[in-house]
Length: 165
Image 1 (cartoon, helix red, strand yellow):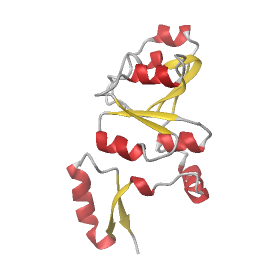
Image 2: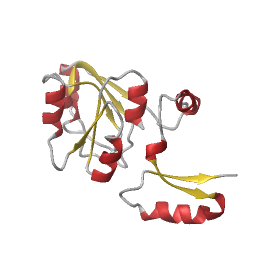
Image 3: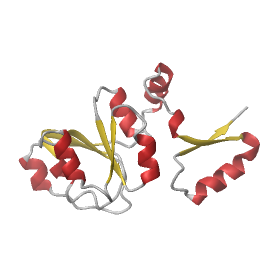
């Protein structure tokens, strides 16, 4: 979703990384998205190749994984920005000196606050196509099945939808 919002907001290319091959395959269906499986490739190498060694303009950290923080500033160009979207479950350490030396901006967003209207507008405008993200649709009478399925945490599931009416 962050990648789609970035593309809709004007980014020409979005590199997205994950360890889930099925989810990366879904992300790669979108024009402008480069999917990077960090089990198979070093993210820093891919970022360098796509940015002539400069680093990304904006890095969105959406995983919440504490493993990202020690090196995330290394991926951003001087004067760039890091936007923290993912919420770690415990405090994390990060390299303040690397952020200061490269004059990086650090911003945060609580991903559910104050964005509902803009999200609906993006979908209604056609700038964001959510259909590839819907893994399965359930009728309202099967809502319990939908929640049971969500609780399974299948690696191929992105969004499960319940149709009301």
